[in-house]
Amino acid sequence: MNLPEKADLPFFAYGIFKPGQLAFFQIRELVKKTLANCVISGTLLERDGLPIIDKDGSAKVKGTLIFFKEGRNLEAYERIVGIEPDKHYRWGVTKAEHSEYNGETNVLFGRKPGRGSVPFEEQEWDARKDPLFTSALEVVRETLEQNKELEWNLKPLFRLQMAYLLLWSAIERYVSLRYHLGEKVSEKVKHLAEEKPFKESLKIFVKEKRDVFKAAEPEDKITLDPSNPNNSLNYYYQIRSNITHRGKSVVMDFDKLLKSLEELYNIFKIVLNEAFKEAHIF
Image 1 (spheres, one colour):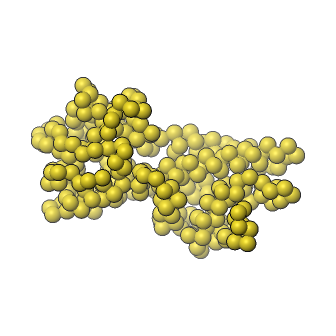
Image 2 (cartoon, one colour; image 1 turned 120 degrees about the horizontal axis):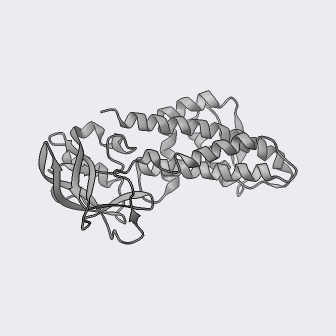
Image 3 (cartoon, helix red, strand yellow; image 1 turned 90 degrees about the vertical axis):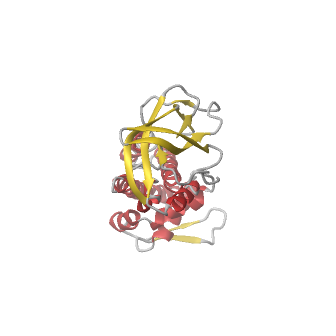
């Protein structure tokens, strides 16, 4: 995505870059001040779980006006375009309405807003209410609590497999909103191992080292080690890839899957909570 033509203008944030949202940390050090409860003309829509604005809409959209430090505008906008994908957004300039500011602002309008979008029912978009961070994690917790014993029909195993994949859907949603909205999910997931809450939680919840082998390359081993965040993340991701059981090893797979699901669920809950907590610090 290109930079906005008027990089000296403030930025109207209504999605992931608002203070309190997951990507705000990407630009926080460059921010001079913010004005909450700012409005612009347009209609707020949602597409693929992301907020977009139809600039021709007849309503008003509430967001936060962000002013960058002197001489840092270009750097801030470079960080913004490094996360936002062209397929969803395009730059535009519009008038911002606020008691302390009445002038132009840069805004990311939705590209082809009528395609695949639905009206957004609430006044402001908030990732904390994302179903993958709320209902989905509740389902994971409930599945864990109800399927801790292996049965002859293997139903508990299959339920845990489904819960594990659902948990990874939530994790992939998290890294997308925090690091990049484009493709290449595996590349974005790697950032998780660099986060302090992940490293610290790993040492709290993981009490043993375990190995997993790649299904396609059984000679390759990945070790879960609480002192090695990168290897541990690769271990959990490999469990995701090897989600189906293998013949007589089903009992071993059940135990490994149960432990991995419980550990990763607890770790991710802390990572998610800390990320939103951090997003309010300015």
